[in-house]
Image (tube, rainbow, N blue to C red; front, side, top):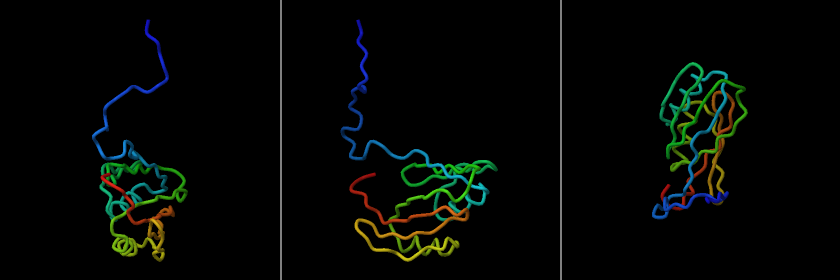
Amino acid sequence: MKTETNSPPSTDAGLNDPRPRFAICHLGLAAADVGLLGRFYESIGMRSIVQMDRMAILELRGGTHLVISNGDPGTTTLDLMVDDLEDTRQLLEQVGAEPGSITRGNPHNSFTASDPEGNRLLVESSHTSGPV
């Protein structure tokens, strides 16, 4: 007779992989103008996967997808990590995202900006501790 348990199945997957087991698959973001916001994120370096009237999907480093759909804008904070904080700040200034001054901290240096829909961008220096 088979006995059922609530314990997860045993697996050897990941034992020889130095990366963390989990990654973020999708982040949702609401927008009044999906196309405008999709083009903004593409212009600052995200990879466009899908652009439609009602939805845009953009890809970030590591395979995370930013999914933009119709909804109430300006209600989200995206906490983004970059390798070159100063260069990214200059890029966001060029596209009109009104970045603030860089704050030096531990473990991150960071600044804030906003996207065209009023969502807050928190942009931070990298803190990875191994392959990701």
